[in-house]
Length: 88
Image 1 (spheres, rainbow, N blue to C red):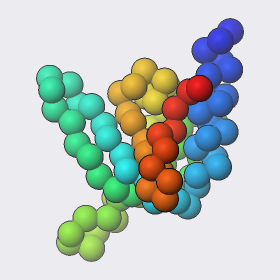
Image 2: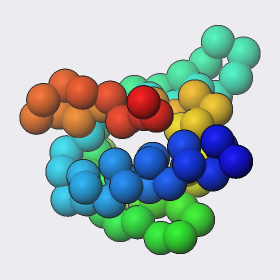
Image 3: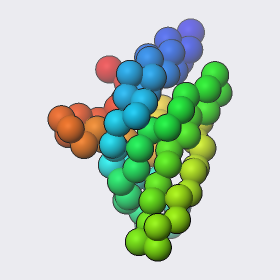
């Protein structure tokens, strides 16, 4: 039951940050990870969408599940106040 409450808290935190610039770190396994800045674009019941822009003026939208944050496969930090979006 605690897991459902934690995911609900993550959803609430993500919803509060929609439209804000965030620093995004994703672990890709085998000591590989990438860090980029993007904008939290939207929140849905099972996933949230982050919009990234690269040096070539192309936009890329990537979706992640809330459990990615819970399992720490993804870390999100708000750029304006440098606070992580996490449980607790």
